[in-house]
Amino acid sequence: MGAIVWLIGAVVLAGLELAVGEFTFLMLAAGALTTSGAALFGLPLWAEVAVFAATSAAFWVFLRPYLHRRFLTPGAYNDSPRTLVGSRAEVIEDITPGGGQIRLDGTIWSARALDPAVRIASGEHVTVSDIDGPVAVVWKDN
Image (cartoon, rainbow, N blue to C red; front, side, top):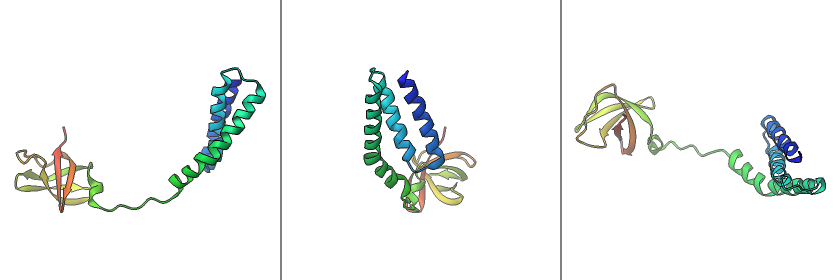
């Protein structure tokens, strides 16, 4: 019975974390979830409370600072063309061994096929496999 109570408490605390967003209730929810697992072994109530306090404090001290650094620091903006690798594009001019053009991320790029023997018709969709200077190297989607 105690395990279910701790599990319900963990769910409620995790729900409260969605409203606050400071990782405080999340650490308490992790402690309650850990205590729920420990309660399955038939611990007395005082031991369950001690497990909850110890694990919540451990999550607070060790996990919360990492989460703050990870989620609250702004990410670096990467405007390098390499970020386009893996993107889908539409062929707007047939891609032949001599080249072609695609519409990629709202702009028009010169393109060549990954396999030079392949001809890709206009209107088909391709995936960017590499950026070679001003040319996108693409392969045909199935």
